[in-house]
Length: 203
Image 1 (cartoon, rainbow, N blue to C red):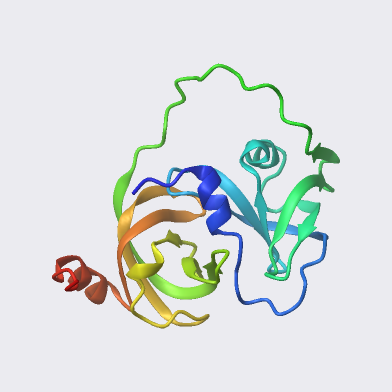
Image 2 (image 1 turned 180 degrees about the vertical axis):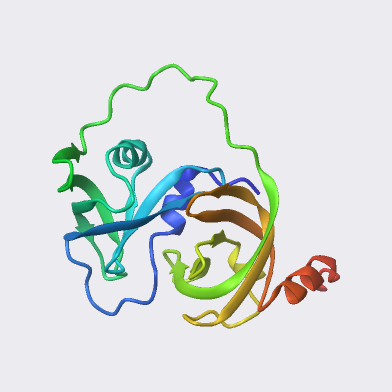
């Protein structure tokens, strides 16, 4: 069930909502960060709606260089999915710059403490539907702040912006909202709870 941070970056690769090619850069005010269910920052959203994702080796550096409310300029690789893969950041508020560099030789493994996972329930209204490389929905960002990741085969309801959505799973909480990996989803929490107890489908 565990998804590594690098895999989650891939899972967030497509929103499936934008119809225009994303530009190779964007400028705006940091509105919020996105995190994985394990509490690791993997992207941010600007006040103009731009969704930017970071490679794992850049995420912490970008996070440490900005705060919500800062004016930033992002550069990277835009795609037809409307998502910006950011490779450099200029904080126009503090004049601090972070740019991608060739990866250093791997360092010895460290005993980094992982965030404590907890059972979470969340419900709200879909703001963005995130999709994988084959167009399959695999995550949603709710207007209320939650980020919910899920296996595509869990989805039995329509997914679209402004649709109600609820999920039960495990994850972490941050100041930007919960991030969880769902074990059951539905249009509301009652449906999600019922899905947990539903018998498995026949082969």
